[in-house]
Picture 1 (cartoon, one colour):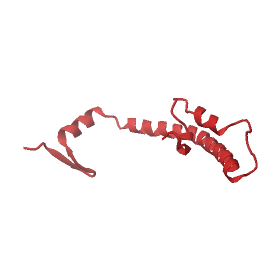
Picture 2 (cartoon, one colour):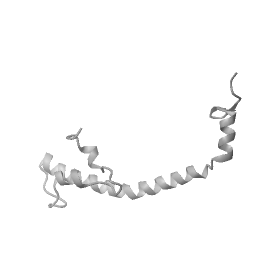
Picture 3 (cartoon, rainbow, N blue to C red):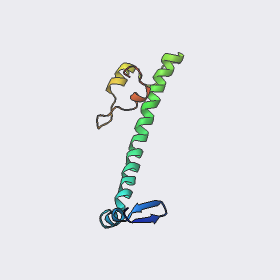
Picture 4 (tube, rainbow, N blue to C red):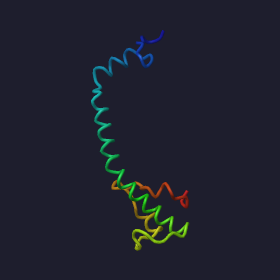
Amino acid sequence: MGEDTIQTPYGELRATALNEMQSSFDTRHLLGVVDALDRFCAQWKGEWRAALLGVHSMAHTVINGAPLSGRRDEKLSEWRTTRTSPEGRIGPQRMISHSDE
């Protein structure tokens, strides 16, 4: 014998699971996650954009022979190994690196 189910606009749910969620889950937590994601994206958008434009500038010079622009003291190898996010995760350089895969 199966459990009782309730039909919702998004599909069928077990009645006991739905009752438990209705009594214990605050959907405002999801809105908090959306707000946190918005803050994260706003913070990193500028940083990632600047970093990727810097890599483009270096690559454009090295690959296409374009004149130097931007910082001249920065090295591609140093950028790849030293740029990480505050949490220690690999930053934008992971998107362009294939040497360690």
